[in-house]
Image (tube, rainbow, N blue to C red):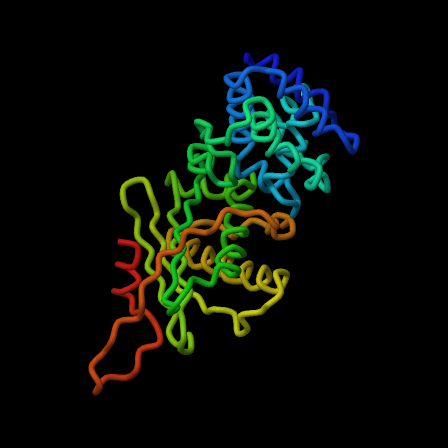
Amino acid sequence: MDQQTFWDLVGAVGRDPAADAYDRLTDALSDHSADDIRDFADHLARALYDLDTPAHYRAAAGEEFLGVRCAVVAAGEQAYRRVLASPPALTRFAHRTPAGCALLPVAERAYRIATRRPWDHRTPVCPETGSNADAWAVSWLHPLMGTTRDGQAPQAYMTALLHVVVALDVDPAWQAWWRRSGVATCELGIVAEGRLDHLRPSADIRKIDDKVRANFTCALPASAGSRPEDLLVLAVGEVTGMFEVIREAIGLPGLPPLPPLPELPADVRKVEVTTRALPSVPRELEQQGYLTLAQIQEFFG
């Protein structure tokens, strides 16, 4: 199946799909060969993958990012090309997540109907949020997330912190502000400390080649059940506070205004978090509930 045939099939769904639109698409696709159905899945994965960028993520405005991208593809080739070229145009497809998600299982359903065999095809690229590593890497701000918390990483708070970082990374004012540093990238390490009080926050800021490496500790929220909007407020305070320290350390002017932050999306990639337990200390020393400067320097290797 060539790309044009893919778009001809998908375009029948449209921007405002009827209740049976995806069933009709499944029936139409099931009339094709098994190879064509696999090609359809590959074209869909590639289209979703190419929309998986930080700028499009921000434009999703709190909606499930994968579902919104599916809704863009289902709207047809012209709509897709517009959104691909102009990420803010993706906001027009907000609140279309449930309908969009129905596009994902179409190829598998069609294959089962056509072949009476189980679907075991793997697409060459993954459509899940955050899979387009090249797009997410083309940025000035590279976050590294860590925690000293025993057990499991505080994913909700890590997600909120990362959400703020992504907003700053794609904001033109913050991009221009960082260019004044003369350094290509900022590697921002954020370590949420764990079970004891956040006694002595540490910061380590160094310039290494064409990169500023800045590692910080921050406190975990007082309540593990904090609401997403409360976590976002805490994350904004932590991240902007870190950049105030970075600004002073490398001689940059005042921070730009904070860009508008969409609500936390329901669908975000699981944040990769480096977990290291607080080191044990001899009994005669004070109980350690914080990372020292030397430990924060070495946290991410």
